[in-house]
Image (spheres, rainbow, N blue to C red):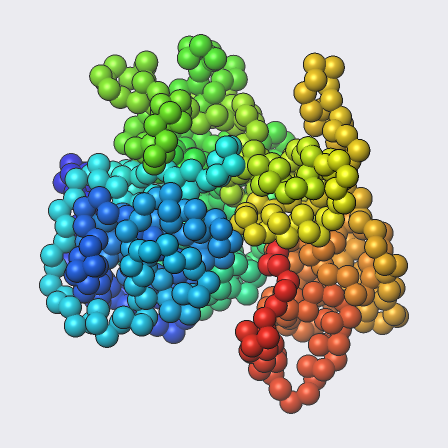
Length: 616
């Protein structure tokens, strides 16, 4: 990383790239394309507009928008104005969005007009980038970039908190610069096209956006919120994506069902949770031109801290896929409970020091002091190291291999989750006396959250009501896939909850299932049984109520298409969630209207009349 780069801000590096390659494509979304010059000019205009509305050095601007060119312009503009952005997923529950906006102390909200009614009004100014587009366009496009200190805040990102509320991690400009300019684990440049597919509130988006835009590469914005076979195929086959990031939860079913999707990909970065040796080895066999990269790191170390370029010779007998070596000059240590180094081959807590460290947790000095501690190994006065809580060891060749956690924090589909936050949400329900939450690996589709609940005295227990209670407080990825009522929680001899004795969830009871009829209903039911791991399904039961997930529905799409010999858009499976509804749709789809027209009709109806269904 050059001294010049590290002594400035992210937006200043981007401005230099825009001068160097003004006519090169910077962004693509659907049929729209924006050059580096155009992106820089648009961001300059919006930055000037934001300054008029109080965004300056140290000011936080909340960002609640769906993926679009305006989203990237807004992020860049906030930095150019001197502020830091707080990305908030508009799909989060209103209560959680309200908490994040108040807790962060953001002074302004950037959003879209169509989202306004669903967002809380906490008394701060709300700027709609689409509604205010004409006013923004009247601002000057000349560069007046804020001159940043690399220690200035760039973004504040929320992660799950063990106390029951999410915590805000403060990341400075130097963290981003160290990640993408000090790169030693991925390639980037004008010939590369990066897919932006991670939610903006997920720190992998930082790697996608700046890994492209600070190197003159093109950033391809994925269509839709969820990475599906369709959206990934479109991005690769039609938009020419060469580099992308995925969680194993999405990668595994796709490499099982349609590995040919990834044949044109040059770099496939995987992370967010442990990789499957079986799926990695299958990918190595099926994708001869693709470099697989295992990238690991918590939010507190600016996205990634270790990486492993998986070699072609990686053995299928390996017990796990290592996370590799530190990136960008980071120092990694393995320590025991007394903060002493452990020997090679011994398991210790993984700690890290370097330019990627966050400032800490916003408004939580005690928690910051607990996890960001003085570095006893660095020899530099005032240097800190971050205690990840992950356990690891060094293999004989020097690479690092993870060995679980020292607490109850878990990762599901790439999201870091404190089980205590879910348990706190459960405890807030009046019918819950005791509860615990675990991750079970024997659920349909792999690992999933399961809640075990003991009802409060004289309180009727309603699983559906409890799920609705959680849906109003937690993002979808934190809601348990099953809630198991128990008379009491099993305990170990020393009085702690015996998690190993918690029973596997059973298919919940209710009205007798209406069995499928011979023919199409029976064929689809057979596919459901194989994916969900259940003995019987009824034609009026929802795929998601039976344990289906967004990951499993990807596999269902592939299997239905193979079975029927016809394309089935993923939106159809999300809309028609029971076998009967789906089969009736298939039969009716043979009329003169296209699939797209029918889906548009359903979306229109849903917006007009509302929908009581919870997103999976």
